[in-house]
Image: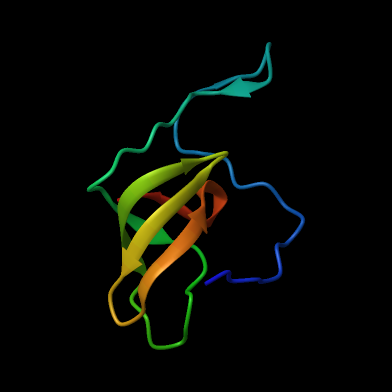
Length: 81
């Protein structure tokens, strides 16, 4: 099931050091079986956390959200707990 939603035009920086000379941020890597906080809830009744199940590539992850089920998340939609 593909979920379409509005993506605001702003950048959320990851927590960590930013190399202002090279304008790059630290590389945050995610791994399966990791709980993350959601920036956007897939439904009004779902929890605000998700369990990452597998990496789909191109910053997409299959995740399980309590009270919602499986969904595909973009890496910009969550941050580590």
